[in-house]
Image 1: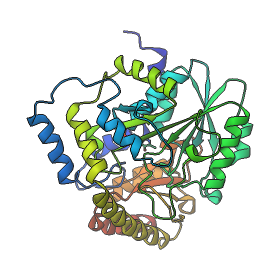
Image 2: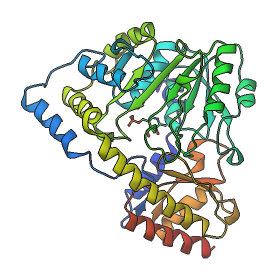
Image 3: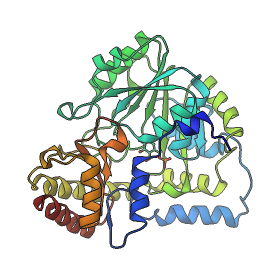
Image 4: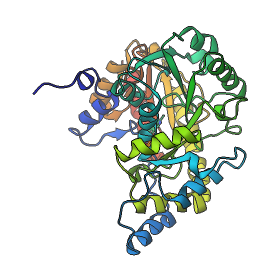
Length: 380
Ligand code: PLP
């Protein structure tokens, strides 16, 4: 049977390729996963169980339960969002797809910073749109340079995706940097999709969103998720906050994709908003300690270098001093020392000098994994 052009033109994920290799090996220390290692906090699990016991086993409204949408809107007290602007989705992943499907036409161009989360590429492709990658650099802390964004704009450009804190780099953009991107969006009449799924996995400074830049109310779509903040990746709950007419279009499109999110997952998400904060704070504190462990550990290995990321649970480090490219580094490390990382090339074609380490793994694993990485590099 003939495959569609879209499916043929969508490359497999470079991170998934590493997973497939791990599946064949024992005793691998895995730093390739993009999810918290903690289990969802008990009160959140209990809220879901209670919802099921009460018989909430049916379809829900397309945009999600009103109580949850109200609680999501209220969780941004300074923005004056209404529940009508909120659409509850199957994780941040579906939030992004639904956004693209609702505002992007085939042939439109979408600006994405590189290195990027590979799903952006797959989803932009799936919509028949064209990704325009704007490279970011280690020396800028991987922040988007406004002048490079502006240079990438063509008459077909329709959207800029901003992801801060960013996967895979852990980069966090400043208020000034975001304001500069916002001004460009206004000058060229572009929509901004602000992917804020790592909003709470932040170690320094208050969180800055491009949604708060002046003049962005009508052109910024925020997506967020319960996955990373509340250790709820498997529950598949995220959301979009958009200007009302766009939110209505998305709600309609939702009917034809997954219709709605399971009721018990929505009950869990509501509980996360009501009672998740202390668990979230403890998890972020644990991640901070692990971040410091991996930064010190990687910096102590000759040939490797990294900045101290201000957000996420990823360390994106430079391996150029080893003489290996990212894929060789990752696959030889896996073969010889049984440590799994993700090659930078999974996040962009110009990323041969980088690999991503997810420290959402126990301290014991981190200690042992760092020792194995040191043994590997020292043996080159
Ligand atoms: N955005 C970024 C940058 C991510 O890294 C991820 C997950 O890895 C997501 C969105 C979506 O996460 P989820 O669909 O689990 O909410």
